[in-house]
Image (tube, rainbow, N blue to C red; front, top):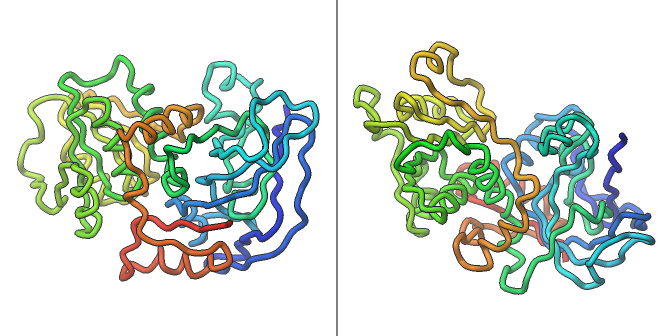
Length: 340
């Protein structure tokens, strides 16, 4: 089954080569049956977008972005949807065929025919987007635009909790490696579900933001490799996508622990470690189908994603935004592009 490709228009951020961004103006697409036309209000710049910007893609030109808040402009003909013109929505970025073995098993995030907005298919760094109606989730007034651009980390945490299932360690203790937006909001979500959580982050400005959200935060440099970890199984979530983060996870993973890999790090746990320590290792890819729950967690104040946003730029200044995000001296935690 072919998965319909989203279409973009208006001002559109195009990645021409690694670190080379420009803004083109494309025709505004019209929705067909089963589709909805939305106008993007704001887009969050995710770590995955940064990887693409730095060259982790072989498809040019590319339009990045998958964390966005938008307004419904038009519902396509013969489209079964409760959405109305003017509704605020967020976009579940996973595209799936609904027919392959993975989809039939309830795992659309690993659909062999699918994709993900901003990765191989057009992303949301544009003024206009036409996408399948079932990818859109309404957003109540209680959730501000800023907060709605940082929902993916919460959906990933919710998917993680589903993936753990019966493997959940006793005591509900968790170590989250990495204090970027993904790690901080994942930790906040775990705390909302009564997990005793500690975040490990080397950068002081990130530790300060996490502490401001009431999280327990540790500098990984203070974790001694010769000191035994927790006296029992724990949940260790690696979000940093860095070799040093995996090493911290390794030190903290007591025998019998569950290790969830969210960041795509250049190294990992060996088969001998997994066997001899009876570790359960889970890959957690995306948060498909979790956006409505994530919106509710933000609406009721359980998780506060807007607190991770430190910088804002106009969509036309996307090149400046990415330059800032990749400049360690500017201490960008999370940046947002304002499209309208």
